[in-house]
Structure formats: C-alpha cells, structure tokens
Amino acid sequence: PQHHAKELEIIRALHESDTPFVIGMEMFRSESQKDLDSWTSGGMPLHQFVHSYYRNWNLRWTVYADIFLYAREHGIPIVGLNIPEEISGAIARRGFSSLSDDERKRIPAGISCTIDKNYREFIRKAHAGHGKNDERSFLHFCEAQMVWDKSMAANLVSFMKANPGKKAVVLAGVGHAWKRGIPEQVSQMSEYRIRVVLPLMSDDLKSITVEDADY
Image 1 (cartoon, rainbow, N blue to C red):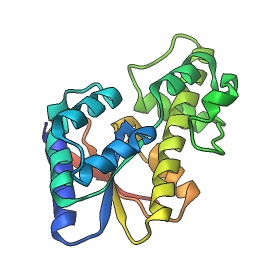
Image 2: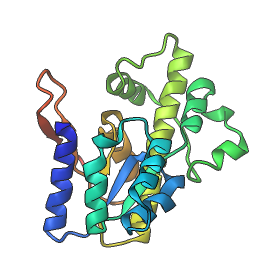
Image 3: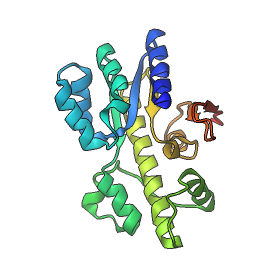
C-alpha cells in the first residue's frame, strides 16, 4: 500500500504544480483505451469501470482505486500500455518466432526481439523467482519480457508523440520499471528523458529510491 501511496503522491504533486501530464499503466491493455478515455472524461460509471479493470488486471481494485479516482476527478488522461496476456504467454511458451501473423497484429508494429547476454542477466536479476529449468525455456521467458517491455514503450511513445508537451508518470512492476526494461526501450525509440523511482528491495519495504538515469 505504501508504494501506491507514493505513486499517488507523485501524481498529485505534478497536478498541483500545473504540469501537463498523463498516467501510463501496465495495468490496462492498449486495446482497452476507450474504457480509460470514457472513465477519465466522466462518461463511464464506477461499477462498469471496475468490471473493465478486472478484465485487464488481477489485483484487487482497492490497490489502485485512489489513483483512478484522482485521475477522473481532475481529468488526467490514463494510457493503457499493456499487451494481451495470451500474447506474452505464447512467447514465453513457444518463443517470439512462433507468433502467427494474427498474433503479431496484437502488438505494436515493428517490434523485434534479440536477446543478448546482458539482457539475460538483467532478466535473471529482475525476475528472480520466475526462473525456468532449462535454457530454452529461459530464452523464451526473456523474449516474452523484452516484447512486453518494447510494446509498452512503443505504446507510450506513440501516445506522447501524438500529444506533445506532456510528461508521463508510468506505473509498472519493478521488473519492467528498471532501466533495462521499459526505460531503455523508450530511450531507443525517442529522446524523452527518464527518471525511475523504485521501492528499495530490502527488508525495509517502506523505502523508496530513485534510480539515477544515464539518459
């Protein structure tokens, strides 16, 4: 809960400083953007939006409720960044090259997937506990994470370029938020400057740290 309170604190600070910005969220797929637009514009009732939330994410609504309600109250746009779970799951099981033409149409155009040694080690660190028993399965897992990160970055950059003059607060899991995740992919697609704020991974989970940006 303290992590989500810190997210809202950042969002509130930007709003109160009259900074034009949007909220990008891993918790919604890009194909659900119409629901997000309807919610933030005041057109969708709460019960209907909660149903949409659960179609996109599996954590209880109360985890993010204050953020969604604040965005609606102040008309702050929310951008869905995620890809369908069945696509990332298919890559994790079969590999990126196995995707059919129809499956590729469900991720941003032009997404490629090349896994080097450094990225493998990053994934081992970022997703400790999600390890696979053999190298082939682990490679597929790495490909799924890279396509996931690239796609969320591409969806964010596409929205930002179509709506110039705004900043973005992006909410994503730690494995996607580390510099080698979404931030690195954004830097390869654009010239946007990035600052990463992460919970400190120690016994004191109340701590928040800023990961200094190299770009």
